[in-house]
Length: 339
Image (tube, rainbow, N blue to C red):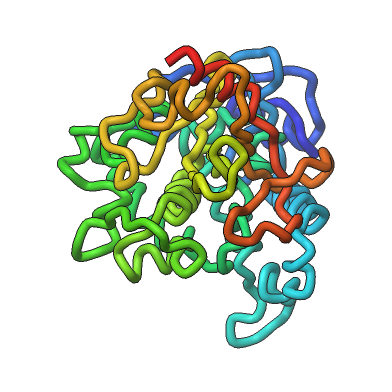
């Protein structure tokens, strides 16, 4: 059962009984220094809506079950024939008990129990934008198992405490990482931008192996890396500038910065130097030339929950309607037309 946590001395009893109280968690409680957690070992923290720094605690096994059910309910049609590949087979031998998606479930919950920025992500945002094993129709791989051990030491070195600091560190904009980032941690040479690579190179493993990708591959790789360390992130973009295919397409990412700041956008550093989450206008595409008044450039963010009926259009696979989306056209039209 999920129940609020009152403190270490009585936690297990009260959590299992579903007591009607909660614990306040301050920045000092959830820090790199003492690794104190809002819930006892074996329980996953979820923020209580409308109550800052208060958490419900859910038994780890129940959290795994609910997360797995969400993924299986919302699987893209083309993934439904790959259930064992994605979720493993109980009792399977030679590694067949594990799957790409089931391992991602465990890793995302483990990070959530360990770090404050991850624990702060609400359940519905976590399900859609941290938990999923993929963003689009890219090849399904176990990239999260590479990203976590490579990036968590970088975050610890930088002593990050906020979502913005995590994003800056992973994306290569935090001087306290001494030059280490996603784009350098897994390759001998820095990963760079190279146009025209989608769909040949746009999953994280290919981006790492080749050492380059275009905007879609850079974006998918950054989203997967951020999710691996507990940050809610999603691919966003336009299938065609001004709704004209010949004008080309573009992808970037959005990051959930917390209840007060909501979603903000940025490119992976190889695709967009010097950008910040705070200033929309320092992106090369956020201007009246790309978003005129009245606007004719559509923008969508990818998601995993299929319930809305909105589709994320993929410029490299335009007949594929299997990826759910969020229509972000109005936001970008209003924001970028002012730049």
